[in-house]
Image (cartoon, rainbow, N blue to C red; front, top):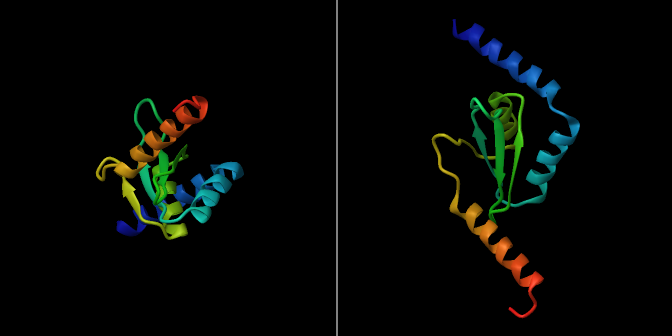
Length: 115
């Protein structure tokens, strides 16, 4: 019984891999290879959103993209050799929020030279 379900999952991942656009795959690979300490959070589908993957670098920079299936997200992280978490279980890192606040503050300073 376990053998058949494993084969079914492998078939779903393979089908999902074919559905992923080259631009999406290139973007995710580029993010992983050009940043240090990247980790992945796979977000399960909801009634409003498709499954997605959130990649977070060590400095807090992040990118989020939709996927054909959550299994593809786990497969992608495993293929890249990066840690992967379930977003419903493991909370997002605080460094991601801090990075966003720093970027917003820096943009405000650049727009207003008096600061």
